[in-house]
Amino acid sequence: MITAIVVDDEPYCCEALALLLERYCPGVHIIDVCYSAETALQSISEHTPTLLFLDIEMPHLNGFEMLEKIPEVAFQVIFTTSYDQYALKAIRFSALDYLLKPIDPDELQNAVQKAVQKIKFPPAPQIELLLEQLRHPSAAKKIAIPTMEGLQMISIDSIISCSSDSNYSVLLLKSKKKIVVSRTLKEIEEMLTEHSFLRVHHSFLVNLDEVAKYVKGKGGYLVMSDDSIVDVSNSRKDALLKKLQPDRL
Image 1 (cartoon, one colour):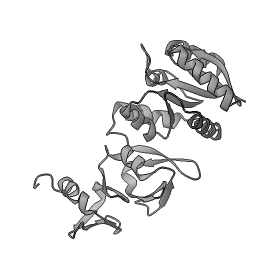
Image 2 (image 1 turned 135 degrees about the vertical axis):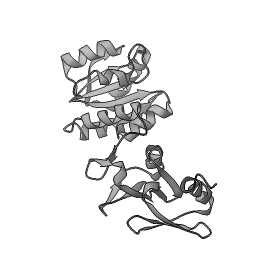
Image 3 (image 1 turned 180 degrees about the vertical axis):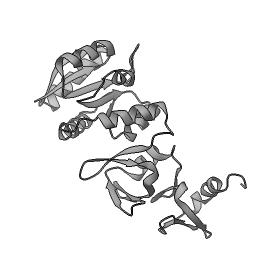
């Protein structure tokens, strides 16, 4: 049985989530419902839940600020939120889960299943990444990457390029290691655009700091620092050259 606390300043949202959990996730037992971050902090201390459903937009303390006040997060977190591109980008960067309101039952089941699989692995490093990404979006040094084996924390500057493989992506590292990631290339792109990465082809995202040479052509191609070759699409060539030669174009 998974014990959960629901945190949301809107009572009807709490009631709707409770009904969905009862119907679609019977293995989740709600031990408390909190309508503010302040009461949630006390409840977490008293009940030590295994799962927290946490609304982001709350008065006084939002969900992120609340997490900053917890010395060590020892439970899984599923954020619930209305659409907020900036916040969702930071959440994806940290490989944490979120549910958009109104909550879809299938997405709820999927998020809970993933949380159950990760119960033995407290998300403290992911929470740290999340908060760091929110404070300094371009200064984060690591990214949380969901792989077939679990979750890996990877240094951003160790990535040379990323390529698309259907609903997965393949990261090529300086160590010559390749990592298959359970994310689309578009999702990887959204996480790394603040960090000198550029989409140069529908199938390739590159670390501009690792470009050794650009070879002209209709679209041309890049020679990366490890001598790997990356094609450049004609439609993305100008954007690439503007990044590589900002003072000349």
